[in-house]
Length: 459
Image (cartoon, rainbow, N blue to C red; front, top):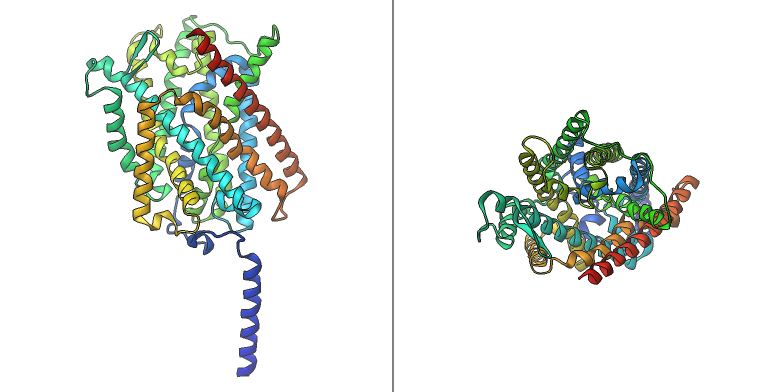
């Protein structure tokens, strides 16, 4: 009996070893990933929804009304909904493949499916996209709080308008204070769930913007001082058709949040909740996008600017207009500040994964965590202060990296179908996403190039 038991145990161990050998990742991965280790598995449903929603609703919300102005109310709202559905499908592809392969990061998934260069491509795209986004966030905060000068025109910031121009409210000092007093504490958290309260506040501030814009638009509508917005685009030549295409990239990249999905999923006690969390977040963000686009376009009509925040730098035609202008701008600056650590979390994780692919998880190494965090904050701050024109460069790299992260890479993973779970519908959706992403990115790159050339010609 004893010999039989020993033989049985030996056979079981042999079988287990063979199974382990067959499923062992082909690429070196972090110890915690290989063991499926996670320090925390108790994130709440609501906290996960707010973190994912904050990842989605960044600064891009201010560009949506101008896209609706180009497309018209009905096509614009339909496109917002369609892109939300495609985003849900692309995230679902990543989640299903990851759960099937017991994979806990986007980079690990790309490495398993496409090898080392797949992982590097994904991590590089996230780094390029998120560094660009965070620098732009800092530039926006500086513009809103300290003001900006374009040509011979100076737009006063909130602090300059309230207290006058001083050294303490200059751009460099204000951004340094923001980095040290706001960003540094928030980016020091090692779990994404620790940011759930700031994320909830960030979403609330986005809703404040929607409520104020809707309230002003409705008041002016009853007063008869707003024009009826166009429901469909006006097509009067090739130039107008081209303008329609230039509005599409803004909407296509409006839901990019894929780089944080795995981190949110890993912290859940019940990982089956990730799908309803994604649906809830996309529904919430779509509602905010539609309301913002509709009411901002209703309020400003054909005068809606590319960045609708600039429309709140003038008289709104209602009592206490300057007060509402300031409330909108302050709430928006605070919203961007609270989005910053969510985007930074994924940036730090992917930079660490690119530089130290086989080291233990960054959250377990305090020295590496501190060095990477301080280095990234310093680079982002200096770039925002010294080279604000970097915005133009990131229009190119950011547009490309965003569509790779959000649509092309997930579609490639499902088309490769390494885990045998892809359906015919999945593959049709994957091809659709790749075509939409490539067309959208091509239009965005051409449009951005033309805008830069026009600026140079005018100068």
